[in-house]
Length: 196
Image (tube, rainbow, N blue to C red; front, side, top):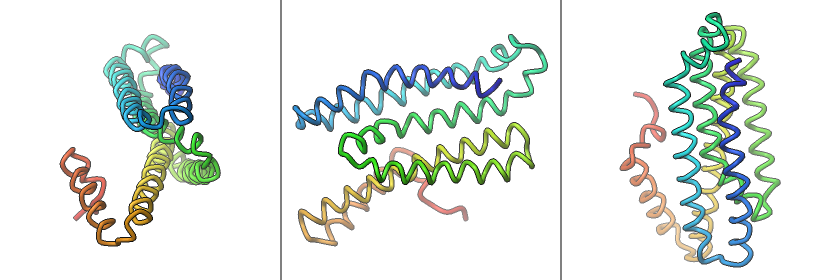
């Protein structure tokens, strides 16, 4: 039941996909100068809408689950994990569109297959240990893997473009440092470090 409820988020995500992807494709073909700004605006919009929906659903999860019967309230933690997994998926969706638009589907498919394998392996491990929460945790880890791989690939492309333009490893290193500092500034630095 938790997975069905969390799929409500997918409805909102698909509605945004249906409006964003055609506009990205049109800008890529006809208005490259506006593509970057629209890409980041649409990425922020997707994350904001899905964050709002998942947050509201999590806050109301007890009420939502009890509507199906008191026995369903045990799925609250699984629902929370699945909602977080949907948020991670949403964060990568516009990036996935850019793979498609730029005809880099081969790389996107490799990333998706990797996330699929991570999901299957995590399910084999975590379902035996944690039951329904284990399945939800496996989905969360797979969607997190998808987001990390997409962002890593795009970061690599960005640095490759800089190197291609400048032929300077020093400038690529400086650019990498600037983006790293920016991630720490916006509060995402803990994702880059290792636990002490």
